[in-house]
Length: 328
Image (cartoon, rainbow, N blue to C red; front, side, top):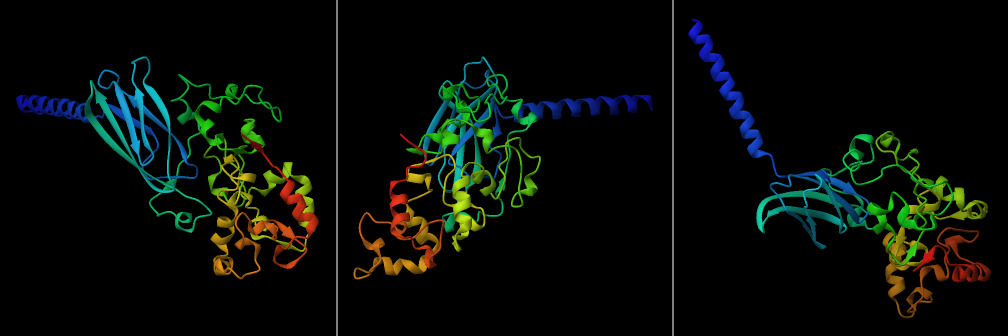
């Protein structure tokens, strides 16, 4: 009987050792810390973070529709990161690990970039979920290389923006020609204050740097004159009335003036599809048919005392002369 018990114990121990060895053998040489599978994204730049066994891997390549980025593994650390560019809609990342030029492991991540202005990207497939990075637990992976504290002083711009602790990972958000003043001066917590609003109350506590939604309370904390003026008008545009300034404007940077998300007429006709035919008619009296003219040549994009948000001559001159944000 004792002999049977001993044999049973030995068999259990051998099985445990075998299972442990199997787990070790199956463990990938590169662990993808970020992004998680089926992540929903709202900006085109994305930071990829990997944990690498430097004894097994000397290079990691990240491939997607926008190109290829390489991370050289030097053995001095375990965690590496690289910023890549995504495209609107579905994205597939291929994360490939190499040793002496030989492919030894490949993993995939599927992501979706959504946009409030493009109907085809506005509502993502249900498998994609918003993920949040900036928690103490997640940030611990980065602290060996990055200072994860907030080093900005409220309302005081950096003389050298590269000194911002946010800059190293997020600088690609501000590389377009026209940039929002808080963004280009790296006063990130002016907006990313960790608070939530009625539109994103479910996100409370999920990240240190959440933005209140709807965003108009943040926008009007700086744009006080505009808030007072537009509130006094009889007719107000829906994005303004609903507090969704960021529906049309990218709060970081954009290739277009006023850092709108895409060309003005594309924004307007994206919602007002019934007006497309009129704009295309050559004999139309709509100035939107004239090359170089935009809907905002006649219509205020925010508010007006006239129906259809039509502007008077004085308002038109003000809009044409206004330069908002920094041009590079």
